[in-house]
Length: 425
Image 1: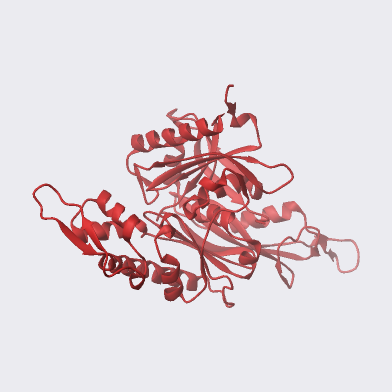
Image 2 (image 1 turned 90 degrees about the horizontal axis):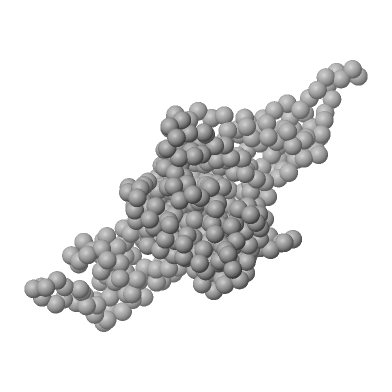
């Protein structure tokens, strides 16, 4: 049977989570009349050619993307023609802003001014004004995320459509990214004949796949520990209040082990996965780890607890940065649900006890929700971004603007992608 082309079926979505350590391609099908997905196919390949969201070797990245998509296509028996991509990197900047418009209109009656009902056009106008911030020429808005609206003196309104008033104000969270970084990422995927349906900031996709409605309402911070970056998204009142990128990730632990033991990055990664504990006190002081040696070198061993001390020190450094970013959200009420950790770094042994001890809040490991099908092969914290990309079309209103190429190098250079989420859950 010939494979279905996902562009021919609007119910089929494809997500490409492009990280520095791995690339995950997921194919899902929207379940009618629900906000759930059936996972049809998924593949994970080792990444190459990208670091901290910046492409370092274009051809290597394209080769890995093609490999990931081919494996997922085989599993799902679907030919990929379009996809939604994840993006992160220390080039991303986030800020809160606001804008307001007058709703008054002239009247022939007494007073000459009347109130009127708020319409969709008013919302769009407020959001457009909120986006009118001064940005460098090499930077563009990736997401416009409404937090709440104010109608006259009424605050914390989630959907003001149909309400009457004289003044409408909107408070929004903007995510901006380097235009060059977005264009280069899109061009790599388009090189393979794939249409890019959108770019999504990684922690937003991860939050969509992981967080529950109560968590977002009462307060929670999503901490996504990737290979080269740690992404943060703070939610309260069912809206995102702050997001940030810390330019340190799980690969820093691998590097520390490699330097300490004078071994290769590959060997250090294996030791981290098999033996490292984020909480040194929970590791064994008696277990001796055999250190890989080169020809002619003396065989060496090191206690598991000794390795874990270095791991704990690096993780505490990351968590201290997380604390600083949470404080920048300037939320008066405590975050009831504490921290939800995702990303490949969240698989580190005993990371939850260390996080709870360092951060002083409740911590849980995030896993994908709202996914049916073969979810048992995609139920880890390292799969949350890919699953969130599949869910994204169900929750986001997309405004995509494509710039026509001037040099003919490839079709559809991404000029601006804006996603306005009106109702996350």
